[in-house]
Each structure stands twice: as C-alpha cells, then as structure tokens.
Length: 389
Image 1 (tube, rainbow, N blue to C red):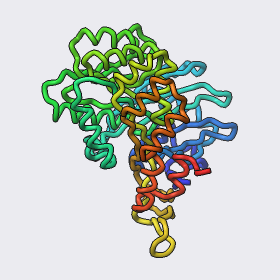
Image 2 (cartoon, rainbow, N blue to C red; image 1 turned 45 degrees about the vertical axis):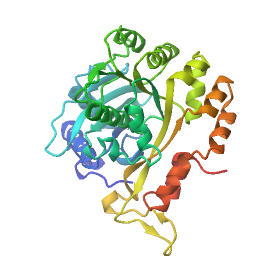
Image 3 (spheres, helix red, strand yellow; image 1 turned 135 degrees about the horizontal axis):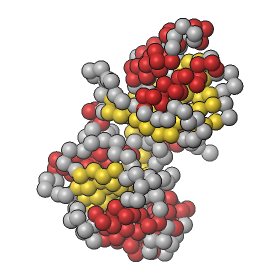
Image 4 (cartoon, rainbow, N blue to C red; image 1 turned 180 degrees about the vertical axis):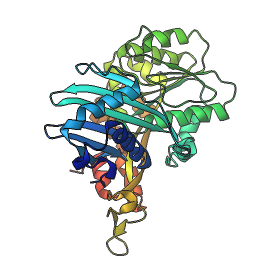
C-alpha cells in the first residue's frame, strides 16, 4: 500500500475542499508516474487507487461525504456536465504541467454505479526513452526482422496483446523509424483516439460515435495514395477485409488485434471471413508482446550468489519492489510450413506445434531471459504469462 497523502487525510475532510484534494491527487499521481487514477465509490467512502507499472495500488480513502464533490471537481476540469450523474461521460482534463512533467494528455471517464459515480483519469506521458525502435528492448531475433518489414512496400504487420501491453508505443516507434529511414513515403494513421503525435505522418482521429468509422475512413484513404497505413485496432470483419486488401495492393499496413498469441491472431482473421490464401499472401508477421515490471534496482535482492532476484520494496519504489517496466515479445513470420497450415485451415494446436518444432521463442522464454539477467522476477513472469502447469 502506498503512503497516504497528508493533504487528503480522511479525518480532515471538512478542512480541505475538493479543489485542493483533486489538485493534490493529480500532482502526486504525476510524481509517481501513475498511468491511471481510479476514484472508486464504496459504501464506506471513495477509494483512490494509482496504477503503477500496470498494477493498482491503494493511495487513499476519502470519506463518503467528499465523494460527490471530488467527482464533480474532476468533471469541471474536463468540461463535463456536473448536473448529470446518471450517464457515462468522457472528456479531457486541461494540462497545467510543470517543466519536466512530460504529460501529453489526461482523459477522464465517469460512470454511474450503485454507490455513486466512478471516475478514472488516464495519464499519458511523453517518454523519450522508448520513442525509437532501438530503445524498446526487442530481442536480436525480432528487431532486425521488424526493420526489414518497416522497409517493405506492401503487406500486413499485426501487433497482439491485451490492453496496456505497449502495442501503441511499438507502433509509434515503427512509424518514426519509417519516417526517418524510409524518407518520402506517404504515411497515414487512423486512431481512436490519437495518442502520440508522429512528425511526418498524417494522423486521423476516428470518433467512436461519428459517421466516419474505421472501414469508411480506410476505404476512402486507399484513394489518397498512401504507402504506409496504421489502423489503431482491427475490431471487426469489415475493417479486417479492407486492411488485408490494402496489404495485397501495394500498401504496408500495421494494426493491432486482441489475441493471446500469434497463431490465435491468424485464426481470428480466418474467423472474420478472410480467405486463407489472402492471409498467407498479405500477412508478413505477427508480433505478440507484454510488459513486465522491472525489479527496483535500489532494493532487489537474491538468495545466495546464484539465486534469482526477488522484489523487496523500499521508499524509492513506494514499497512495491518494482520500478518501471520492460518489454517481452515473440514474433512469428509466415514461412512455408505455417502458410501450408493456414491454407489447410489447421487449428490452434497444430499451428503452435509447427512453431515449437521450428524452435520458436515464445513470450515465456523471452521473459525467462530477463529473469536470468535480474531485470524482472520469476513471480512477475508467472503473473504476466501464467504459471507453468
């Protein structure tokens, strides 16, 4: 549990107003590099949680009497309707950042519950340390292959993984690489919403409830002479079909899909109605990735001289034992045996057996390398990849 903020002491709720409480919470979340702040109403109060390195930590519990005013203050900052507490609302909190904060956006989402309004603030940081492809920590088997794909004139690259696994960061780094190393190419992105500004690319924001949907925009963009297209996410069969067609007709298309592994992403395309020959002819590779927490360098310890490092917890890491995150990834390129399996409509087990037979390094194997290097712990790897049976 994190150290409680002095200025939000539950026993002094009558002294500190909602304005100062919210300002203090936002400031401390920024100082801790939290990616999300959760304001969760319960029958006993408003629980404040920070998501640090992908894990929620309780920050403070405010008295129930303050809950409504705190959420109302957040809604004022985001320009939402304060008098409506019965509908979901979304908005942006205006930035008043200090030098060095590197915040590029703060988004607020409010949702009604039985105990009151639940609010989540998502904070986006500009991190120059992971803005380029070479800085992501991709392995020696993956990085050169990705650079070769970035230089391709056509085909489809898919990134898979759950929300918060760094897919958008990887895509942004790929686009920057193309801008810098493949000069003169027309690059267009379709995103919901635009998260990172890429100099040299035309970025289009798709409204989830507007008339310009992903399929509509993508279909029109193919007439705009683009060479590189990035779609924030392939969510439906229509978008998948247009995207695959783009990859077959002289465009390099990059996008994300929600899938647990590369073979699952290929099967999902088939389930969306994409013909097997179209998949084998267009898909260049599937990159599957996750983020694992880095052990805090100030307090990590190991049992003996050769034992694995373990998380301890100290003031530097707010007693979590971890500070920062590292990337683990696996990439599958469609070679002859895998193409043959796709054309034969093989199932998931058959495809994974083919990959294993060809010495494919999966996520856990990549993560085990980080455990051996003392970058992360075996417990964290089990948490992200699941425990071995």
